[in-house]
Length: 592
Image 1 (tube, rainbow, N blue to C red):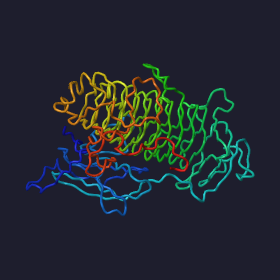
Image 2: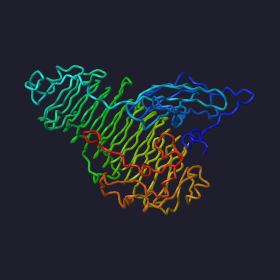
Image 3: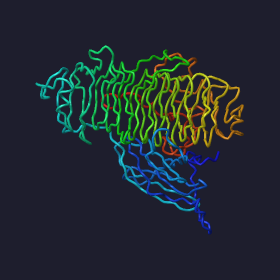
Image 4: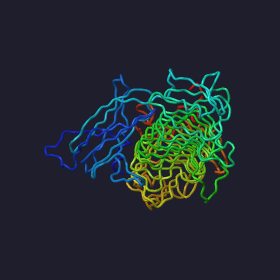
């Protein structure tokens, strides 16, 4: 299928030959409207976008290369993604204005080293004329570290004054905050701090105010106190910046921690329990919400896997929910909520990462990328015991990257593409469930979406892939399917293709689809669940392939997405042959 973005993932290098003697039509030649723009960097990813006019015949592309500073050789990343024209947000306006008729190209370089300087090179290529090349230097983020010269102050439970010394600590959070200034490290000693903690003082860039458990006992912020009903919030940290919360237990409130309209808030190694919603930072009134670092936390919601009320609604209880830009949500353990980790509609839900999280026992979605615009990335997560896997309902143009995730034991859709998403890219995911491997039950159009190198494994059903959605300019291919035989292999835009061979030959998609034996696929011997109500231990889920599996070298190279050795075809699914299972959930304290 020759869609505008079909070359983006197939690594076909277009050769620009000698220009013809006649001039290219002005409408087909490409011309940049200004320089490319670098997005806010994260630990492992760098994003950019570029507005281009012309190219009416849509044959231009923007090639992306990168290298660590000091290296001589450039590495190929994926080409920037051509965003569908005219995509509008449901709420508010995008902060990037694309003139009528112009194109937005956007994309990310992923799986980089943190705290490392990189050079990026973007090259606009168009056989009809035009073109440009731009180079930039930028740096991935380092994980936040407390300044060595921080003023250390001590706090104990209670109400009173004190001066913050070991001998005369502050009594309670209110008296401590009254003396807070940028660069302070408050060590909270073990005990219960009752009532809502209203945070109203900010730090400064590079000079945060840090609220950290001292390590001499559990530090419990218990919002209920003496109240008969839990209050709305345990920690209220909205409209602030450069404040960190570390090694705290936050409990007995409807919301654990709320950080609307805030910047550079760190929540690390905290334990949330007896809350309906864990951490929420979604109000983005001025477009500056962002820079959140949410890592190594344990969030436990009110639900059990057996609580799923089939056919009934459940409260919108979420473990982590955020919006804005430049956010990192990583290495968290989330369980027992309606949704695990959700991005939230903007404006400006861009350039953020969700990675290496362990999410389970969710009554709806493991992860929602709903309302995302561009350069949002969900990767290297594990989702187990989930009603539906990863949602993109909708995505506003993208690209939104969903790659190298492992999903096991879902009841319904592995990827929920409702409400007409545009620009979702599903790459190198392993999805194993009971029933049909892939279903997409919606009447809304799905536009400009791509799949490559995924594994979809089930136990039967009428189709391996059944879609009731009108699929518009979508490019699905090089995926593997297991769990048949099926009466029909594919349902696509109302057409049925009985076998994988017929789909390869006659369907508009899946010319390289692969049928696999689900019973012998994984080296661990793991098979699809026979019924969804069983609760599996996420740690026991090992979805690495057998080295001699038919899926081991069946993929297509995807530049920059962790492919196998040069010259070799990558494996289908989340893991390359011989690679370790990534670390999911909180890391050991020593960082190993």
